[in-house]
Length: 410
Picture 1 (cartoon, rainbow, N blue to C red):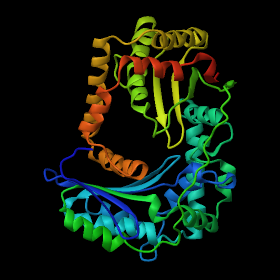
Picture 2: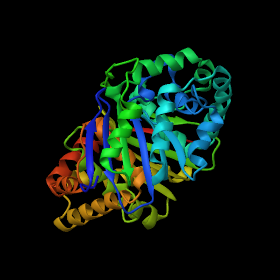
Picture 3: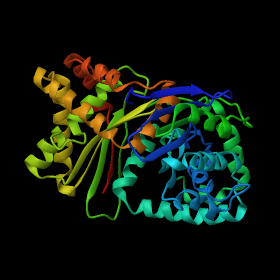
Picture 4: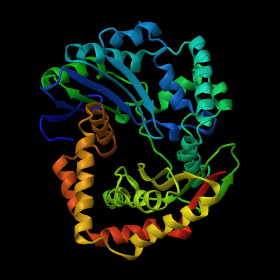
C-alpha cells in the first residue's frame, strides 16, 4: 500500500498485475488471487473451492506432488494457498534470486494441474480430518455457523470446508467444471513485493501468464437481501458457553466502511484498550475472551461480537455488550477520543504492512476488488475525514438491538 515503487499493469489477456519494488530485503513474495471462493459453488459443490486449493499441489503435466512441494522448499522458500468465501490465492516467499522459479511454479500449478483421481481420493480423507478437527473447536466453528445463520441458506453463509458428505462426493469432473467456470483472466490478479526491476517482472508475468484461458466468464454473484434476525442455542459438550451476537453490515464498496472499521476498533478491536475488554473483562472479570469484528464482503458485510464464559454469566455479558453499543448510538465520541481512535487505527494499518506477505496479498485483493490500490496517505486521509457525527450515524444503523441475531453453544 506504500506509494513508493508501486506499479500496476494489465497483460494482453486482461490479467491485472501489481508490483512493489523493495530493494532492502533479500526475500520476495509473489502470488495470484482468483475471484473464486465458496460462495461461487452450487449447492452440490459445497467445499469444492477449498478442495481444489488442496488438490492443485497434487501434480501437473510435468511435475509430481513431491516436485511441486520441493521446488521452493529445496531453496529455503515456501509455497502456500488459502481459500475464502470470495477468493482463492496461491503464493510463495523466496530469496530474490529465485523469482522466476517461483513464478514458473505457480503458473504451472494454475495452468497445468492434472488432478489425478487417486490423489483426489486421498485428499478427501485429509479434508474430512480437517473438518473433524474444526468441529472440535467451538470457538472457531461458531463464527462460521453464525454467518450461516445470518445468511439463511445463501451461498455466502456456507462453511468454506463444506460437509463430510459433499467432500466424499467430489470427482475430477466437478473440479474441472468449477475451474472452467471461475478461473478466467478477468477474475485473476497477480501481486508481488520484492527486489526485482519492474521491466523484468513484466517480462516474467507475460512469459508465464499471458496465455489463453478456457473461460472468459465474469462472475455474477447473487446478493443476499432477505435478512431476518434469529436467536438460536445449540447444545455442545463444552466447559464454556460460546456466544455470537451481530447484524449485517456494509459491503466493501460502501463509503461508510472505513467508519465502521474505526468504530469496531474502538469497541472490540485488537487493542487491549478497547471498550469491551476494559468494561467487561477487566472491570468485571466475566470472560477471558471477548472481541468484535467487522467482515466486509463484495456485496454484504457482517458485524459481530464473540465471547466465551460460564453459563451463569452469559445473560449479564450480553446485557453489558448492548450497554456499550447503546453508548455509541446515543453519545458522540469526543474530539480527543476520536483523535486517539484514528491514530490507533492508522498505527495498526502501518504495522500490518510490515508483514510483506500480508502486504502482497492485500495488493492483489485490492486490485481484484477495486481495480486500484490506495496509498497509505489516501487511506489516512479517509480516516481523518471521519467525523463523530459519522460514527454516531453508523452506530444507529448497525448497532440496532432488535436487528441483532445471536447464536450460543451451550
